[in-house]
Length: 196
Image (cartoon, rainbow, N blue to C red; front, side, top):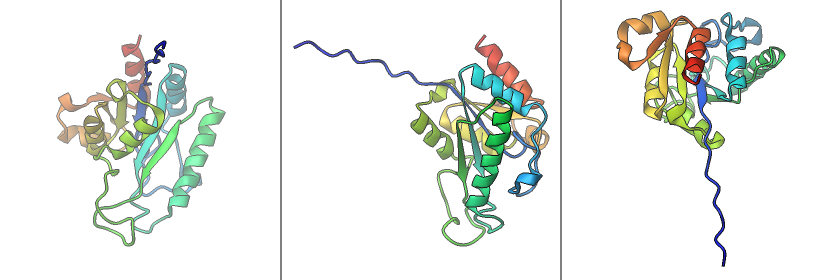
């Protein structure tokens, strides 16, 4: 009986993006599409990642859901708006992953410990499992220490952008934990140079 050839599993590299302060201008508890504003250069940077063969995911803590400021449906509506805006620029996000929890504040089922709130790696691990991602060849880009920690714990290379809360984060996080970049566009330049 002839043995069947087993095709090797090919995993894809990804770039995981924090949302507020990395993708868009930081606005506390943003949920209205009309308040959304890309940080300049973001759609073009994502388009370049798409064309280079990276999967691109947004991984975002949205504790405003737990606190009752807005609903998970509001978050999903905003993400559809972001996807539509990116599509018009020839770019795409391969998935939005949201943590709606807060460990102590708010009420109802969204309050309590979870494994998806960054710095836990749960959102990245879920995306990796669902999309066959090679975490060792992937990057986590964000403006907060929680983003860096999530990337480290998932086995990605963490990158810190100095938009949003990034400048304040850079003052308290050791440089060897995360390379620093002015913004997402600059981080993407470096990622693509690595693959060059």
